[in-house]
Amino acid sequence: MRLETDRLSVIPLTLQQFSFFLECKSGLEGSLGLLPSGVPLDLHTDEAMRGLYAECERHEGSVWYTYWLIISKEYNTSIGGLCFMSEPTEGVVEVGYGIDAAFQNHGYMTEALGTVITWALTEGAVCITAQTEKDNPASHAVLRKSGFCVSREDEDSLWWVYRYIR
Image (tube, rainbow, N blue to C red):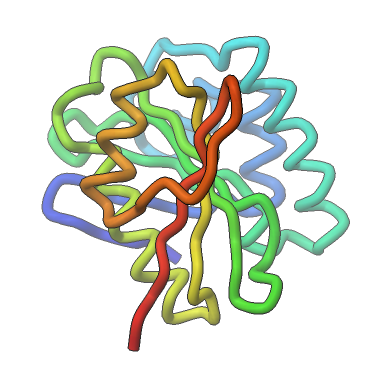
């Protein structure tokens, strides 16, 4: 499966690709015919993705539990990724995302998130949630532009919600 926008391809990694991504990101990029991004996963993201990979294994490679690679068509390289935290439960699913620093502030994340939201809504989701740190205005902007609004907050975090209204 591959989701397409004018500037991006967004692909959910297979279980084998996800494993390869965690062990050798540049190797996976090469196997997909991409130029290496040269951007390694930071320690926090690597740890989170290894936990997600374990869930992906448990759920036999379900796209709801994998890493979705965001690819720039113009540069033929991976520029970030997204993931869902589970399958929708009663129509609700949480999304997480990140974009490489060199590609921030160009609308790529909003574009990728929009196409993945559209896909999720066709697959049974009716409410998509996200959590951000309060001091991350760039992520707040992505979510606002994508139709999310703040549903609650605490000292450190904001929780966002996107509801599909038929």
